[in-house]
Length: 370
Image (cartoon, rainbow, N blue to C red; front, side, top):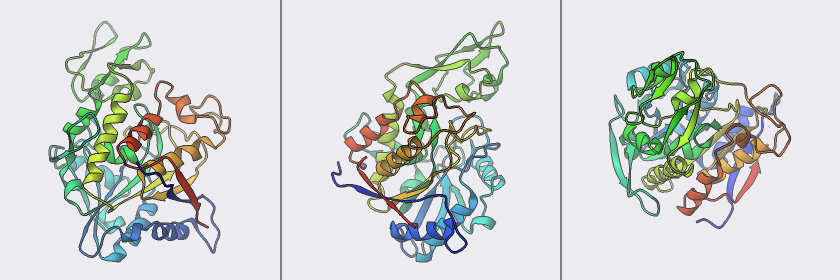
């Protein structure tokens, strides 16, 4: 475990005619060493989330283009990437995934670099990476993540229904796992149906495993088929689905972190993290909608330490006064906003496990760039 404080560079949302946020962002990327991640001719994966069709809270293309302009000054061969999803949405295979990315503003024409879906046409391309110190002996990482020379994780920070917060650790852990890897991470839980169910059938249409049916105007889940992806929890219009943990709630978070460890093992020091603490929606960007941001936009954080950048992101979110009329209960400054939304989930679990595995530290120095 790292004992020294990790530097997390931060810019807020303020701008002037002579010092715009984009200008300060470029400066921040260079100060944090992001411009030097990959040398001439080296392959640099910029891992991001393109947003599901209908989602509006994903990272704005102008910020991605700024990152690309900075990192490609070295002559590296950068590409935008993500992996295919478990659920039945607009990103479950590479063709639909790239089409969605283009519709959301990410294309060769707008970005100047190609899009490559890292786990192949249907999410089956992966390499097994041996890890130590955790629950799993090996993890199944998307092939093109393993084979690239350097990795830059660009993350929209938000709440998450399974992990409490979705930050850099989730982006590289869950986000770099193949479809088989995602199944392995999710397989410790399944939803339960409450009396609020009206039998509308939306969960049936969304379920990727065909595990849900409607009987007597009520959804029924087949435990033998359920893969634990939890997508039905958020798409249910009546809030009738609830998490029914088979094991301790640590299961998904700790295995997600072990997948992150597998990714980092393949990259050495050639890795960086950019967290966008803006449009802080209560749930993941994997859904075809985005709920209102729970706090005002905070800014952008850049670091070489995934634990530090995520912890700083959460601290900055909790330091805000919540926005009225959102999913929050208490809007008090300093209250745990993420725990209010996802009451059963302790987001600190992922940070504790990541520190245990030596991925980084919660002890950080916030360096504000003006």
